[in-house]
Image 1 (cartoon, one colour):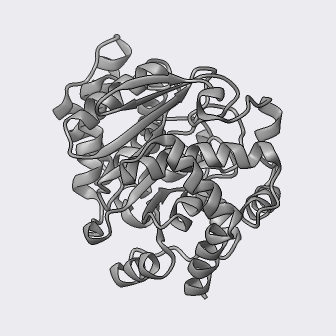
Image 2 (tube, helix red, strand yellow):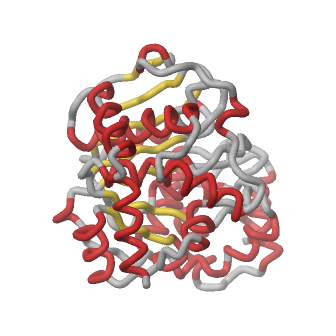
Length: 330
């Protein structure tokens, strides 16, 4: 690891094979915590390259516990996080609305690192069970339209990194990797990223797959459709910039989509929205993000997807999906 750190600190980059080898060696416990921390810190000081990201991705997918959900044609809604915007749990809520619209979801998520309220923090607080048991996950989709893939259960080889990430409490390249390493390999995916350069890298990676995908970056820095300004959406066939008005939705003030300061507060916001008691601003953001997911999975217009999202939330279908999943957890 010393040679790798020296190479990187001299402003060099890693090849794909070097990046892959480093992560494989981390999984084998070959490096001490100080070396791992130094390695992670270097990537906070510069952007990751395409080759490095490809190598890290290959290592994690090689090491992960894979789960075959191909019979269910699922979609994942996952952002990189790290945008420092402190919104409520938009992608997780949108996942339940998407499930309520009869689109199957395999939601990959984790505890918050750079924030205290990652998707897993809130779902665990609300009584959702995490499992890597294939039969349980399939039953979850069949009964509720959604299953939760809690990352640590599928990436046990990264147990050496988790406490270091928690101690650092900062965005690392593992945030960037998260959406790329869903262990169920969903055919449909919505990914939010925190800058345009990362959007380009993701687009390049996804172009080489057979996924239906949409990559989101709000131009004022959010890793989701925030409706606080224009958003760039990149799919396999096109790139577009949409204003909130283009989506027949209102432009929002950033404060109107803030999240809670604690897990308890975040969970309260989460349940209020699911029970159709959210504010107009909160609902609009969910309609936009769930609408894009639905449109991507069903190959329909985003406008039609938004209408289906509205119906799923207002008819309590999203809340029903959550309750069915929670009942399976008991």
